[in-house]
Each structure stands twice: as C-alpha cells, then as structure tokens.
Length: 402
Image (spheres, helix red, strand yellow):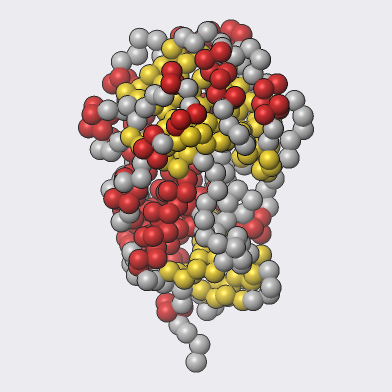
C-alpha cells in the first residue's frame, strides 16, 4: 500500500540559505523534509552579507537565533560617503536606540557562517535528509493523490506532499511554471574578503560602509570579529553582460574607478583574488503557487544587491510559510495561497526599491548633488521611521489579517 500524502516528506529544491531556512520552518510544523542540492556538498559561496533586525526576528522564529548571533559582527552605524569628494552623505546609527526601536541589532556576517548556523539547526532536528549532487529538473503533480514528484538529472523520482522551489535565481522550478526572462542589469559586482592585517587602518570602521560614485560604488565592513573585511565594488559594465559568476581581474576593476578619491580607491588595491558577478533580477510576479509547489527566496524574487536584503527576504519567506501552515493546521491548499499573498507585495517592493537604490548610489551630475542633499540634517528618528516598513517585520505580523 502506498504512503498517505500526510506521511510523505516535503521536498525542497535547493540547499542554500532559503532552502535550509524553509527546512527548519517545516520541521517546526512537524514535517519531515528532503533537501536536494545540485552541488557535491551542502555549502555556501560568496563573502559577506548584511542582516537587518528583521533577519534576527526570523532566525529566532526558526530556533537558530543564538547560533547566528554568535557569528555576527554588530555594527555601530550604516554610513554613506561620496566617493568623489569624501563628503558624508548619510549616517544611520545602529546602536542602542536602533535596537530599542526595532527589537534587534544590525549586523554583518559571512555567508558561510549564516549558512552554517542554518545547516547545524537543520541537522540537529534529525528530520531533514540531504541529497547532494542532485539537480531537480522537472516536477509532476498528481492532483487526485495530492502529491508532488520531483525528477532529478538521473531520472530518479522523489515523491512528497509538497515541493518548495528554493533553487535560486536561475530556478528550474520557476522556469517550469513561469519561464520568464531575467533582466540583466549590466551592473557587475566584484566581491572579495581581505585579512585584517592587510586592510587600511583609516577604513577599519565598525560600520556597513558605502562609497557612492558615478555609475559605481564600493562597500566594506568587518567580518568574523574583525579578523577579515568584506570588500565589494560595483560598476556599470561597458560590454554586454551575461548573467553569471566568473573569475575577475584587478585590471578591469581599476579601469572603472579612475575618478574616485584616493581613500576609497585604495579598496580596489587590496584583494588578491576576485569573483565577478554579472547581476540580474526579474520582474515581480503575483503567482508563486502552482498546485502543491511554491517558490521561495531568489527563485521567487531575485533582486539586485542594493537593498542588502536578499538573504533576509529568503529567511522571512521561510518563517511566513511556516506560520501560514501553522494557522491553517498544515493544510497545504489553504496555507500556500496565504503564504504567497503575504510575501508577493513585500518582496516585490524590495526588488523595485533595489533598482531605485542602485540609481541613487550611482548618481552623477546634478542627480549626485541632489542625492547628497537628500538626508542632510535628518534626525535618527526620521531615518528609523523611513525604515519601519523594512525592519519592523517579525513573526507576529508576518501574516496580515484577511
């Protein structure tokens, strides 16, 4: 006799930050989970990411708050300077007043550390099985049996009661059900990690720091207790770009930052190796649910990096999915539409706000002068008010009434 749908696992395509967060959220609702990762091992590439208070609310809801807090670096502020004349554009204090307002700190962390915390949490539950070197290539659904079957690259069939497509910006699950084209931005991002001993003393700030230049910007902040520094540079490419990651070259980076002040420019002299990301996003979509399959994280809302919220949104997605299932007593047919209805507008706002923030960072000419006046004289309370929609999210308000 075949298993009843309720006894089957939930399938998750993708073992990244979003996939692991989803696994934790589902386990907390009593499900067994199978995670399929196309890479040979469950791990994370990349460098640093920023975590707003909303991310820490989500970590707490998933039971890994302590694990992530122990690996994060807590910043004193977020600061933006003009990369041409070094003038201060804006400074948001992230100390005690910020924590009181939003209930959690602002922090920076290495991607591998946040992924590791989620992975440890998932393994400790004993209810998550991992299958590496396994790429889900096609989904089938049996609407009468209320099951979903994922077919991998070898033709092996995996059947569950639902499937979460957390397989990244180039999602196979999204491609099957939506098949919408990416929007290649033409913006190229170089990321590197620099050891503390090699980092300039005059830039060793405990801050998420951004230098805004014409058609470019630079970011730096400490990682791993200040033992390392994350360095990110972004520019508008002169050539036609293809979405993806390649090795970069110092010569290319230098060619795009000729007009930048020496203090900021020294950042591009530091890394010994670079990874080059040609970036893309997609237009927000209003349908994430396809029977018993749904999207999560970058598969649902791939975005540019300008809001520093990509990972945070994926973890929020996972918590919201878990809450929708809890409220609807693990009824997938009722819970999935509620999950999507609460996530579509918020993540769509992140995608569209990211585009506008990129324009703001990269302003030139008169637009640059206007940008540099936007936040002049603004109080910290006014900054916090403007950020309430973003950082005020938590598990208690993630499902709106109705």
